[in-house]
Length: 79
Image 1 (cartoon, helix red, strand yellow):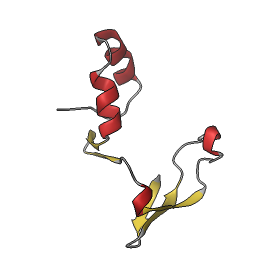
Image 2 (spheres, one colour):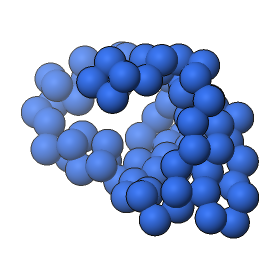
Image 3 (cartoon, helix red, strand yellow):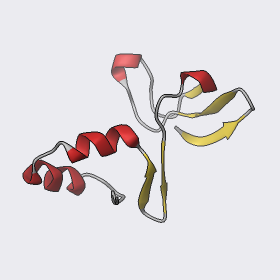
Image 4 (cartoon, one colour):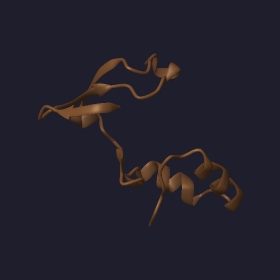
């Protein structure tokens, strides 16, 4: 999501990407109840903050997979 605001019980914002499996399109306005959040991430100063699911998947990658994955990102993953 982009342009996120928190209302005290839900997060509101615009989809940042298309997610066909969820029938969501980039730019679509959505509301997500806070209790439905199981993972989160932000990028701050080019570094991943949060993103625990991404971090776990990254830890399980081979060195070659990690290299290819990092090439697709516009942020870094640090310990």
